[in-house]
Length: 399
Ligand SMILES: *Cc1c(COP(=O)(O)O)cnc(C)c1O
Image 1 (spheres, rainbow, N blue to C red):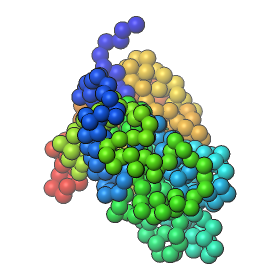
Image 2 (cartoon, protein in one colour; image 1 turned 90 degrees about the horizontal axis):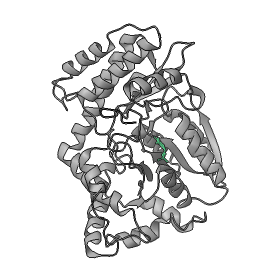
Image 3 (cartoon, rainbow, N blue to C red; image 1 turned 90 degrees about the vertical axis):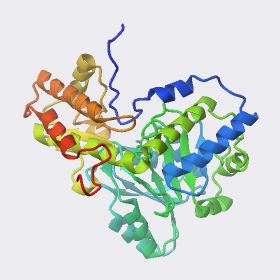
Image 4 (cartoon, rainbow, N blue to C red; image 1 turned 120 degrees about the vertical axis):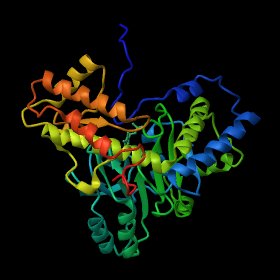
């Protein structure tokens, strides 16, 4: 049945796909071995480096983010190797499960799902590991299940002070193109990204930004790999081509997404996300709820996970909002099932979408009889007005 008006897809990925990207996807598919494709390939392979803040190769797969996780592991490690993982939330847990399925040994540092990676704990484990048994440290930059962002630069510094040679692998699937991230400057060895969140594309592409050190590890790594092999990709990519049929139309759309991000300017994109997050938290505080993130400096700019008061069902609230406002919100994952709902505020998103999203939530709270203080949307509007011009937040004058 036709449902009037645009759906607000406010899950933290996939995100709303803007019209220029939908138009690019609708263009005729081109010959992936022809000259037109070669030019496109070279352009996107070069252009995508900007969002990773890297000069090093970025490998692009026709796969969801999970595929790029697998690529990171199989290109650098050998069966039985030990990796150190930090369980910041649900996505860190999934990555660990994959590592175990692939035959790696996982040493897990349990987190509380309310704060980010504790660099001091990583430091302590690496400092003890005199035999260098641990081959890689894996962390999630923006934990999409909790709305917590981790300080990757601090993690790198902690690793460096031990002199331990482990590789650093970081999942940026829900932060790439929405939260400041620097592959080279922060000394990350493999950065894992996906298309369907900050990049505003549909699901279907994923990425590995790879350091020299990660490629060198690949020379002796014995995990079987074929489809995911970086070196086959990087060799073909020199001329803009791929070893197998690439997701041609998605790459045409990626070119448009990169142009859009460049036009807006990445620093402005990042501050736009912070504005939206700040306004969302102003509403949540006003309603009288807690965010899942318990550390002020670690609130995610791209999504907010909201804890409902004891005895209320987050899933019932989401179902009500979906039916009445045609707005999907993110569910609670793992141990947070039915306890939290998640508001995605990333990708192609502006002030009126912030307030529209929050009014959908506030109407849902009232309809479900969940006790709250009315007027959260007003609090969000005051926050947006205080952080005046788009892109103005935290630039000094407007903050
Ligand atoms: C969305 C997401 C994933 C999963 O990616 P898929 O594209 O579903 O395979 C992994 N990690 C994080 C942090 C995510 O937000």
